[in-house]
Amino acid sequence: MENNLAYLVEDKYPVTKGHCIIIPKRHFADYFEITQAESNSVQALVLDAKKEAILKDRSIQGFNLGVNSGVVAGQTILHTHLHLIPRREQDVQVAIGGIRNIIPGKGNYL
Image (cartoon, rainbow, N blue to C red; front, side, top):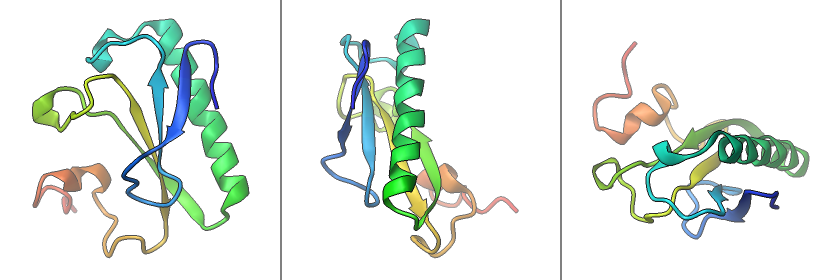
């Protein structure tokens, strides 16, 4: 899937079935350098991919969207990209906290 400023590929190391990444065509490492036009193109692919994923797999009940910006934030590929991760009921024992769980002990805030 692609449009004028971005494209989508399956993640090489998927967290869940259907995990994909949306990549701007222009090379830049820091997500915060994205232009409005690029952001619009990325968002359009996110919405298209979400629709397609749900049509293909009815077990999908939610999504995580994620960007690692900077090495200390876990960025290993120094080309901006956004993760779209389909989620299913009970794919983890406790889903509370979502992405807060990337730092141990921060996910359970209730």
